[in-house]
Structures are given as structure tokens and as C-alpha cells.
Length: 223
Image (cartoon, rainbow, N blue to C red; front, side, top):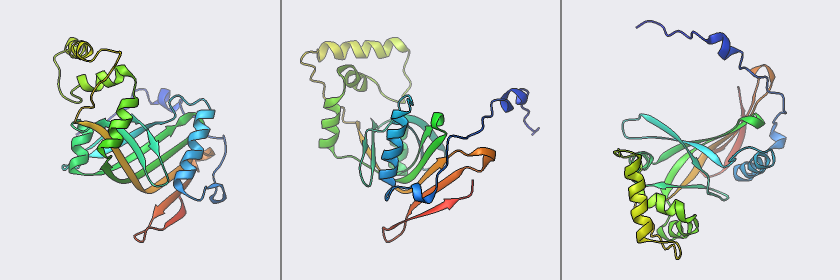
């Protein structure tokens, strides 16, 4: 097989930017990864990052083939993160076969990123019901209308399903039942890395790691 070529490599190379906004040292870390993530999430929001809670979630099925997509963080506590999706979607099927995910927050404007990896479990039904009920009416109808990740004939098929559901569950009162195949996932990280861009590619990478006994340690990684 011939080696791939990059015909516009000069244009791509010219996109390089020097990262000079700041640094990250061990003394800058919060006592826990969740407190540190919350701090950086606040910074991203204050810094004008669009949808700062957007995160890239990578999963893999039994065949080991990775798959990525962007979802929104909807919950953060001392030990876990939560997001919501269709359990019958591609990511849902992969998490059934291999309940582990890797997550990336790409805060490029702040020259920062956060990477997490850990086990995933489904959120309880009552909590998923409560969150679903809090969503905008149109989002609830959309979740019920869409067979996520499945092939559909065309856009009109989706809109027809939406319109039928809107007629069946008008707003008000807007009582839209949560689909049985829709709910939350809880991610319990065991590794959380905070990355701060620095000049000359000598970026700062500081990682929290959970040991077998449940205790956490921090370390610096080479960029």
C-alpha cells in the first residue's frame, strides 16, 4: 500500500498556534479530580467557551472498534459524571457489551483539555424520569420520535413521527412519557488527566489515578 500524502501540508502546518496562556503545576490542583473539573468547568464558562459542558465520549463494543461522539455533561458529583442518551443507540449497545468509556473535554480556546476513563453504569429509572421531565417539551418529543442510530427513510419520516407524537401529547399539558430505551449513564472515572498547553510542545499533564484500594494519587506525565 502506498504511503499517504498530504497535498495541503503547508496550509495545515500554518494552522499551528503557540500555547502561552499559562501553566499547571501540582500545587494548582484541587484536592480531588471532581473539584478540579468543576473549577475548570467554571473557567470555561467564564471564558466564553460555547457549551462548556460538551464532552466527547468514546466507547467500544465487543469487537474493540472505537466509536466517538459529542454529548452534554448533565451531572457532576464527588465521584461520577452523568449524561443521557438512548440505550438502544450505538453507544448504548457498545456500553452494554463493554461498560467502559473515555471522555474528553476539549476547551481549545483556553488551551486546555480534560481526559477521563472509567466504568459506566445505567442511572436509576426514577432519576432518569426526573431528568426527562425537566427537559424542554420539544426535546422530549424528539427523544420519543427518534430511533437513534437506526436507518430512517428520510427527514420527512422523522418529522412525521414528531408530528404524530405532538398530536398525541399536546403542549399544554405536555405530558410526554420517557421512552423505556432512554435514560442516564453514570461514569465513575479511575483516571482523570488535566492538560494545559505550553510553548514548544512542553505541555503540562497532571493526572489523578485511583488505586486498587480506592485511594487517589497525582502525578505529572511527559507531554
